[in-house]
Length: 248
Ligand SMILES: NC(=O)c1ccc[n+]([C@@H]2O[C@H](COP(=O)([O-])OP(=O)(O)OC[C@H]3O[C@@H](n4cnc5c(N)ncnc54)[C@H](O)[C@@H]3O)[C@@H](O)[C@H]2O)c1
Image 1 (cartoon, helix red, strand yellow):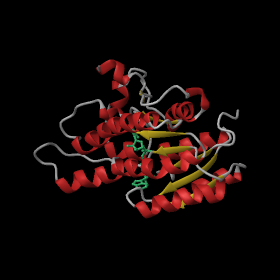
Image 2 (cartoon, protein in one colour):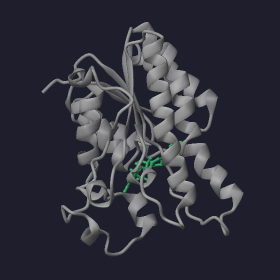
Image 3 (cartoon, rainbow, N blue to C red):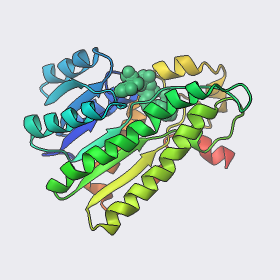
């Protein structure tokens, strides 16, 4: 299949987990993909894709750094001719409640999860306008919708992604840009982050009684990245095994 033939994608946090899954599916669907991460192992993730015959490069990009963003956008343009798709996937986990939460922890989580996506959108828009369109996908979380007392830094950062997505989506339509911006809110996905989250019994709470896999998120990202979703912007999508339906 070639849903993304001729398109160029940049994926943050793509060394492993959900980002790596999205990068692979996008490659399989014909995109050229710039994988980025703070982890040097992203080079191995990209090399494995090249060995399978796909167009993939790796570049170090710390989403907290504007200079890294500028060079990543330049690299996408130099190597692949421009930018059509940005997936703001890089993220970190963080806990704390209203009384015990340390402000430094809140800032650490916001810096990656929220400001990282914010910076990404701002850097990508001018490059996407050169190709007269694009799709930006922000990986939020089901946590944006759930209220738990002790996951404040993470939940707040993801909740802010929802509002950022909608405001940026409307901004683009108001400017007449064919650039769509949507968010994906996964339930529990079997990655390194879930090891950190460490919530035993999670599977029993999921209506479909299985953990999600990176591919479950990647398939939704593919829909939002492709021309099958040209009338979808400012939307939230929930690959979560039915969890949200069960709590709202
Ligand atoms: N795993 C889940 O259950 C789950 C559920 C909902 C949402 N998410 C979200 O999905 C995204 C991917 O998470 P994952 O589950 O694959 O976890 P993961 O920890 O395997 O991957 C996160 C990636 O982000 C990278 N990263 C961290 N800080 C960065 C920075 N400053 N700049 C660039 N890259 C950075 C890490 O190096 C890592 O490769 C995150 O935004 C996460 O919040 C995960």
